[in-house]
Image (cartoon, rainbow, N blue to C red):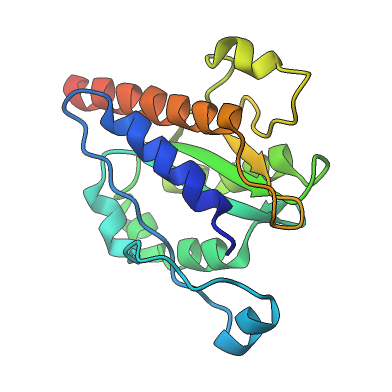
Length: 192
């Protein structure tokens, strides 16, 4: 809504695109809130990132799904999108495809890890392969002097009241996640 997830997504796309032979695309899910509600929330206009349909998911070799956190879970907009993937689930069109997760929360106690944990159920039912970043980001995972979102589950940022933007370290972690998952996706595709 306020662009935090999109900023991380742009870095993830850059990281994925840095892997030779990988084409990364950026999509957004449809907004479910009425314009009047968005106006009352002082939400800025939506970006021009294309809106994805559920059927377009089957064209991808892998995914990195990002969303803001609402009460320790993915936002309703993303859940509504995934709820519309029943046909893909029935045909198991996403089974065996690698998928990662990243997120934005309002505070340090805002549910970054619970959001990832509750989102994994969506991947599991589709038969996707969850690819966490673990501690592959190295020293950045152990940063204690600066506020930093993210965890072994995936990249993240803290939005605060919306005015805090992703830090350089958070953006570096997002780039790393994109590159890491793209490399794994490429290996899996070549092995198939």
